Image 1 (cartoon, rainbow, N blue to C red):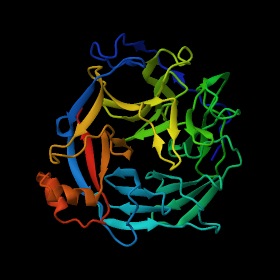
Image 2 (cartoon, helix red, strand yellow; image 1 turned 60 degrees about the vertical axis):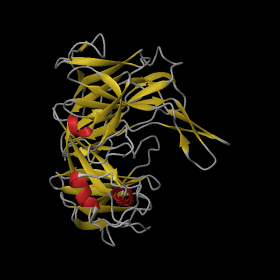
Image 3 (cartoon, helix red, strand yellow; image 1 turned 90 degrees about the horizontal axis):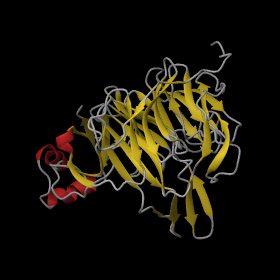
Amino acid sequence: MKMMRTRIAFFLMPFALLASACGNTAQQNTVIQINMNAKYPEKEICLQDIAEISYVPLETTDETLFDASGSIAEFSGEGIVGVDSWYHKLCFFTADGKAVGVIDRKGQGPEEYLHLDNALVDRECGEVYIVDRTKKTLHVYALDGSFRRTLKFADSSLRLNDLAVYNKEYLISFHDYPIDKGLNRQVTPYRPAVLISKKNGTILDSLSYEKNYVASITISRVTSGEYRAPRAYHRSGRSLYLSDIGSDTIYEIDTEHHILKPVLTRKPSILQDTDGKFFLHLRGMTSRYAILHRQAKTITMGSNFQLKDEDSHFLLLDRKTGDICRPRFTNREWKSSETRSMIEMVAGTPDCGYMKMEAFQLIEALEDGQLGGELKAIAQGLKEDDNPILMLVKFKR
């Protein structure tokens, strides 16, 4: 592989700002503006009105049983990959939920990881990357679980947990500014976005996205404090987005031509809003909708390590009309279910997100006569300790 000798440039495409986020219909080349000080209305939304809903029961075996806190790294027509960070393993399923196998290589050997902090699935290369921040390494396995290589990093400013597949040759990651975390302030402009060779872990010159403000969430604790920055990179379907809470703009990245295209921006500018209450963060994007998080700058953690974040909330932006609301999603087949404000978006199928439903909750709802349709039929065959059921949400255009 030839090493890159010059910086890859991100060219900003011209764009026009929409004067009002809830005003006229957004056009193809406009960038919708999010007013950080606006009071957006709450709105109850039936998922069946905005999306096609289907359910995938994940088969339960001794190997593929994963903790209730587990998440989904990727789903597509080629399969589903579940991440169990508690038991440090990956669970593989077919697209219809049949168990295929696991990667469970926790240990201290040369082909093992000490912790599984995150995982990236790379279908094009037939590999999965397991992030072990303790060892500052990426362990690379084939999708069948066989070991391929380990990529090691000595740079402590590199956010290994903030990682995404960039293209066939590279991953993309994020560099923190070399100052103490938690200092929300202007800094000398620097380039945080870096490419990492999939082959040998070489870190290339920074891409020419410049930032001049360092931001992080302050977590106040009983005896001390800590700071955290949400992940900057997001895969929604096959698209890659950059959402840095220290930036005014959320971008879509064209990884073939290395173009950074603005899709959303905030007002007032973060440089003019140092006393403001919120950061803006992207959580998912579809052809029609954007799921955003208006994240409180300060949250608390009690003595039981439970986070209290009552001020933060999700926003749903209709990119076609420009309308913005605080969503409360309901399901027509589960009459008394609690409304949810968030749909998880992951790599894989375009315009598709998911909600995870635990088996014991569905069994209780079935006994109370709350379920109908396909969901009722699925619940009738469940046991309380079964793997969760994925509700796939295919958003309409």
